[in-house]
Length: 171
Image (cartoon, rainbow, N blue to C red; front, side, top):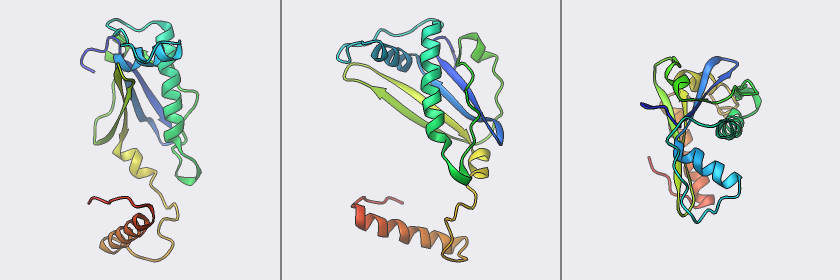
């Protein structure tokens, strides 16, 4: 974030990378989660956070990051092997001092919302980490197809699945 005040950030390490995941919660998302955890009315707007986070807010962000990292971790041979426990979430000037490697990454945004309030949590994963963990998970045990042939095979598998589940596939 350009101005890190009120934001929470956690750099998550895994077996193959010290920065396998970057988790960021914007101030409105932190305010919303704190409010709901401590009995706030979901029908009322949440007061925004426009200051450095309190210890309680940092703990709540850290707990949320732990849940998300656990979900992304996976299991089996393609698991990320996240190093738990996560370190405490950073906020304010600590975020500005953080140096991160550059390069292509995937960003996934999750909107946290009630009728009256909404906030954003983002997960960034470097492409190098995702590519390293795609592995040989048995996804091509039916034959030696590669390149275009595997694409055709995967497309036919998706279409067959969607005949069962009724979903519409967009390419």
